[in-house]
Amino acid sequence: MSSQFEVIEFQFDPDDFTLTMEDEFQIARLNAELDKATDPDQLREGAKKLLQLAVGRQAVIRSLVRRLSDLEMGGTRTLRSE
Image (cartoon, rainbow, N blue to C red; front, side):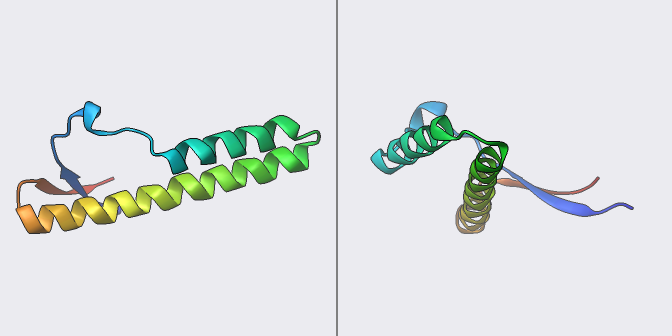
């Protein structure tokens, strides 16, 4: 089964990205929660929260990159098959 997906590429400088105070707080809170975990169910729930956070942020990033690409037309858009 082959599915198609769109790849949008932009050049970014890694120095443009820094953690916000909110990011640092979230990291500290989740680290503390995982450190306190004593059973596998707690660790599983922590892993699920991290997964939801990562996937949610990735969806926002994809949407913003798509918008930026549409506005600036500076990105390279390619339709690919798996």
